[in-house]
Amino acid sequence: MPAIGLGTFGSDHVSPHEIAAAVKGAAAVGYRHFDCASVYGNEAEIGVSFETILRDGIRREELWITSKLWNDKHGEDDVISSCRKSLADLRLDYLDLYLVHWPFPNFHPPGCDVTSRSAVARPYIHANFMKTWRQMEKLAAMGLVRHIGTSNMTIPKLQLLLADARIKPAVNEMELHPHFQQPELFDFVVANGIQPVGYCPIGSPGRPARDRTSEDTSPTEDPVIVEIARRHRTHPAAVCIKWAIQRGQTPIPFSVHHYRENLAAAAGDPLTGDEMRAIAAIDRNCRLIKGQVFLWRDGQSWEDLWDLSGEITPP
Ligand SMILES: NC(=O)c1ccc[n+]([C@@H]2O[C@H](COP(=O)([O-])OP(=O)(O)OC[C@H]3O[C@@H](n4cnc5c(N)ncnc54)[C@H](OP(=O)(O)O)[C@@H]3O)[C@@H](O)[C@H]2O)c1
Image (cartoon, rainbow, N blue to C red; front, side, top):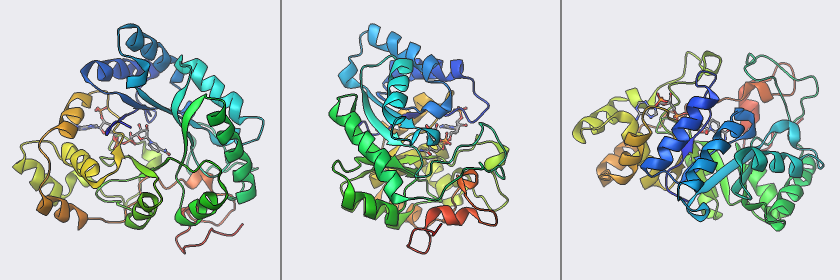
């Protein structure tokens, strides 16, 4: 997997065509890894870019393309058809990685308020998740996807999956930035041979208002990051990307304006050991993507989604 990927979620304010143009521009400057998902609503436009990129001479084997199964398609009969739809939209014969986007089958309308709840929302039920996972394994056996993985999982959920999977997840995609380092989950996935892919690597400054709370902090405004950026004569976002790669996770920054700088940051001068240690010390345990819309019961708080007690939150 290439060490940095381009995120493609436009957070409501960047159009599918702008993102498709960024994918083409990013491939031209050297990106080979793209993080897509059906729910981002832009795979058809990005597919046109992939077709152009491949026609212009980049070989398919050089690219790493991820897509994700959305929450309303966890049903046994929906997984394979949903993957086929992403493949058709992206104009590809296979995906390098297909992820179960969230462990919950809970659907909500795009752009809805965080207090919105689906009437049929469910907790995590491992037996149901395994039915979905068996279909993911089938996709790998069919050759439609090279690797399968998870996203937004917790240690107790991954422990169950690792015990029951025939094909173990190759990747867990999770929020990771200097203010949300998730050290326990990070160490757990690495110890189990699962590659951590880090979303919101620079603190998602463009996320919509509904995903902001007054307690949220911004890693790119942290004085430690700002000082390291000054020393390296670069932007704080570049420091977040360097830190991510040197720590061993794969960052997937979204960008339509700064993707060139972000790739340069990935390839440029590394941070020193002291700088890495200084960043390790500024973790604020500040989760930005809290996932409130996936809650299944009235009166719950977003913490219930993340199994903070070390056990899966009971139904
Ligand atoms: N698996 C999941 O559940 C999940 C959840 C969330 C996100 N994701 C994935 O992760 C990707 C990244 O997350 P994200 O988009 O929320 O957050 P992010 O990558 O941390 O932040 C993206 C924002 O930062 C700006 N930016 C990027 N590079 C910059 C630079 N060098 N200098 C200044 N500003 C810069 C971008 O603006 P410009 O466009 O103007 O450059 C954009 O507004 C998503 O696109 C998606 O693919 C996955």
